[in-house]
Image (cartoon, rainbow, N blue to C red; front, side, top):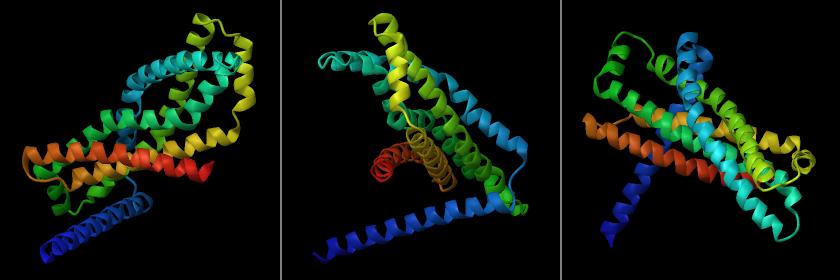
Length: 256
């Protein structure tokens, strides 16, 4: 019995230590951003990597998500004789929930894993140690540009996701199933408020912070060798995805 209590205590202390280290990591990252931000070129490079290179997967995912929403929403609303409300269903579902969450998950899989692997390889090949030995701040050159880029890119990608998804729902609902185009956009205009857009914006910014935070942290504290990098990358993607879903529920319950 004493053995299990000791094990539980050890796991609890290890968890608290990890949480404290993660909090120190993000706080110091923000301190570095405010005190000595990196060069603009590094920021633009990461914006291109996280944002522009994620455009295709965001566009494709948004288009088919909107199509599925249009198809399923139409046949569900048809049972109640309310197929004219299809625009409201598609727009609110995308703007409040599916747009921020799915765009964040796609960016996590495409860019987040690469960020962790890149920083992890820098760690195991002692490139980060070389920066520290030359009195250069690794957070300034490695963490700050990635965190700032994620905070900027995620809301933009989420906006693209929403627009493409709404158009995908329009193609299926109006062009394929015969919903009145005026009713589609009129009901959307009546239902969508600035509060809905603001909620999606807040979610996308917070998801960008989660992705950059977890992925940079896991890469910076990666284990030794190729196995350590692979474990850190897998852990970063899984943890980021789970935290995105948990945080989405929390924000939804608070901001409603």
